[in-house]
Picture 1 (cartoon, rainbow, N blue to C red):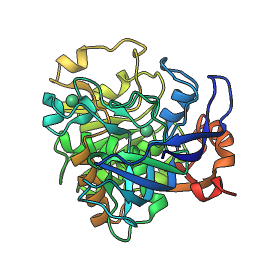
Picture 2: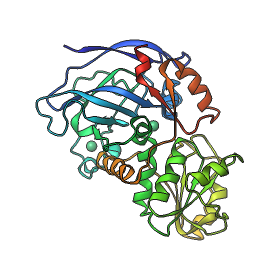
Picture 3: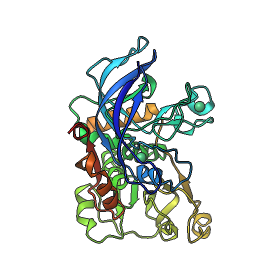
Picture 4: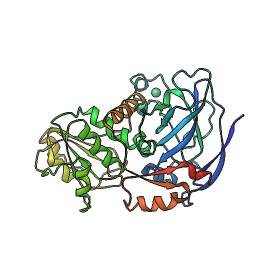
Length: 342
Ligand SMILES: [Zn+2]
Ligand SMILES: [Zn+2]
């Protein structure tokens, strides 16, 4: 018997999020049923609810920074038991047999990963609904273990903001003595600073908001003069169209600027002169695979890292979206799902 659950959904690109009743499937053999305790609020939730990227399927229940406790497991589940603290991030399934999936890079699945919301289940074709809800059911392979003792509300944003910045830091081999710069101090940017610092790198912030320097220092950023040829890696977290050309001369020879926040054409056009003149690269990176997400959670557990959050009630979600669009949050809203019952 499917379980009726309450969530919050957008019914159209213009509508505010409002209560919505739907069903979660009975756990399949490899499924974990999870009581959701917290869900982070990501910029993608706003873009999806408002159909900024096209392809929105309504009703749309956003939320892909999900933390909860296991309620029950299917008979084939071996890694989880009722009561375990677990997380679900941006993906709930993938083909499991393409080259990317075989390398643990489910986010680059050749048949496209099944996203946690606004997607169709690979087995029964039903819509996926995200974490702004009481419960979720997901395959064991896509469920993450939360390290013992980690603050559960602060852990939620790790599932998207955390892995989205951890993955490029690892891919470009950031370590001691690396010089990293972060563009934009929001949910992603503040995680990038904390993670880069914990990896032993020197980290700096590019921000156009003057008041943010002090906060950046608290998060581990150094006051490095953004001189020519300084940074090995720049993580650009800005989620809107912006000019990246001013950052390119600050890359060291062979350095890379990686875009993690913005999807779409850049404006003004990319100038290749600083790239060719120093074998520099502009790259992109999408979240991270499931194994890497677990590695990131364990790394955060070892280093005492969680997200800086502002907890909200689900009833305040529309006001939270309005504040996020003005960058008025330090640094991630997290919905306390206990409010859904209130
Ligand atoms: Zn996200
Ligand atoms: Zn695949």
